[in-house]
Image (cartoon, rainbow, N blue to C red; front, side, top):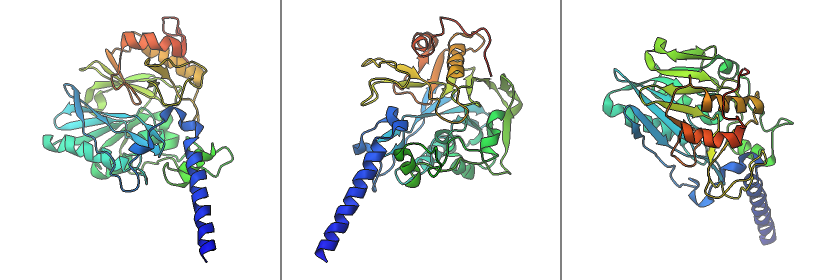
Length: 341
């Protein structure tokens, strides 16, 4: 009996070791290394952030999302005071998982921002619909059922039609063993979030526009695809802020990473821009065009760019963006003559 128990314990320990090794080595998460000592796991409470004021009427929430015990996404959610006790946010963060109650923490932070102002969440603005941008939608819409979800029409097949940005873990092209395990263990959802048919939505069409028709004339958008076909950048005119979503990630000394997937060497202490283009519909060449447009197209007016994944937590001025974008996209100091898409 003792031998059987010892054998079972050894088998369990080996299985756990193999599982953790596979999760740790997941190439899809290589740029998002985090210390396991910080992981909100096994009873350790999930971090509950609070929105801080970044500009008059603009608030930022820093709420990292742990993908595995070894990897976390540094992400920021923005909130905008639209007046008349109405607010908008972009984007909607990650999901609740066995590691972290991320969507619950996001919803709580929104409530703590809005309740003292006797305000409601009027608009949920999506730069696109990847899983780390829509994970909190269900919780947020439960708390604010009258909110309108705003997204580019290119997102419709995914948010309303059930099309998948990434294959599930059992599919032949389901990714590395670590990615499959993350889905199997519930650290990541296996299926794309789908909005309820009765949910109020506002679809954006074309290349650019304003949200004046939704009672938010201070907000506008530009369709800048590449990372996703539906990707848009939001512009808040009173603060001269651009909300860049995943048009690029701003990286700074990611642990254990010396080179980016495109071959560029990382320099210690120096930030770098990189656009992920691994999911359905992504287009690396188009992503570079979009970055060049954002950096140099004068009709896209802003003074500071805030990205969803920003390791520096400082954002970029237009001049800083232009300095970094040349290494990432080789713009040649100008916007492309004719953007595709």
